[in-house]
Length: 517
Ligand code: NAP
Image (cartoon, rainbow, N blue to C red; front, side):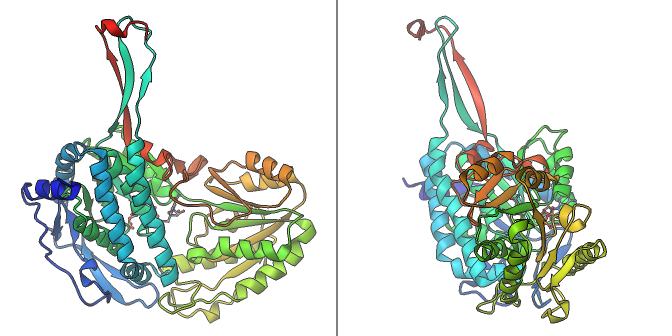
């Protein structure tokens, strides 16, 4: 019997776990497959309303149009969701790893087959361009494929025995139910990067997506159901963030929490998980330095820095927030950077050729402006960025600030906006100290062809990821994650699976034949 039919048989044998679609809309977001636009939570294989009648509206950040709404689940409903995830986990872990992999691969195929609709959902609820949305679908799907395979490598080990007549070793076991709390900037990939690892390991998951972008998560649930992933294995809880998170963190039936979001909320959740001593993994904020060495062609380096700064309108944990350029090419670099950034097209992500969409909401626009004002008051040069050209209230035109200094917010904070801050450096020790002068430690970029300098910088930078002469650094095979206050643990790679596995040590005594082995 195939994994799919086995899983379906199990799903239909569960109480209340029928897959009846209770609501789908053909308006709000027009899709080729309208059933991917879901406005209800998905728990234990059912599409559910909130029992208290509370709901959250979702808006298109480019136009302000109301796209729809999702319910806020109540305490008793979340409690039931945890119970069903717990019950489902006892069955899910019993599937052979290749059977789980087969279901994940079916999910992967469906995600890719619906790339256009998923990209459109993202463009409408998040604002990114359709091309960026398509890229995120491929990126997000790649984790599903990766972990479908990686599950096969959850090896234990044999330990040479120091105990007479005993065999010693370890097996790897799923931790249990995992709560996954995700942000709005990558509404799809931040879910699959966690969920695929957890499901491959034999865990079940309860996903709490960001309030701004629930529809991508719910479309993933629809496709998980179609892939035959059984009821209770992948649920999406929509609700008031602090209530849902508090309940997930407090509940001892939830064994692990994986969170991607701001450092502020990450700290809070880490404290909330202390009482039930959960496995916690945190992917938090970044404040990436982008270091340009004296041997670089200033135009080539400026082009790369523009790419690294303005992706997702700067709302990216990997955004090059502090661009540190050797003083010998500083002014040249600035003029190339200004020229290239002026070519970026700002507008509604649905329009072909748009590079920068809107920011997620008006608060983000206001924050970006205060960061620019603070820098200018403290002596930064505003080289480019005329906000009167913004095509709508949620848009922020790309800004270039030169001569930034450590006392400015643009240096200290993750701006999460298209505000580029640049300054000059002279010697290597100085630039390492400048780059490390942040509480964050997610990613750093280095641009130079000098091998000795590459090595010095790579080892001196206190960041979880260092990318040399490449803007692209992410992907399913790599251990994504930060140090310092950028987080705990890794996602992707073989390390991503570890977050969802316990080690069980065994000692089998009384085995005469095992003596001496
Ligand atoms: P956020 O405000 O921390 O929100 C992230 C998630 O936490 C959302 O689901 C949000 O729900 C929830 N949340 C918010 N306040 C909460 C509270 N008081 N208690 C419990 N949960 C709460 O972050 P964001 O603005 O969505 O995302 C941007 C941040 O994510 C940036 O700092 C960025 O660097 C980081 N990020 C990091 C990575 C990485 O891999 N390291 C990747 C992407 C993003 P609601 O939306 O419903 O409030």
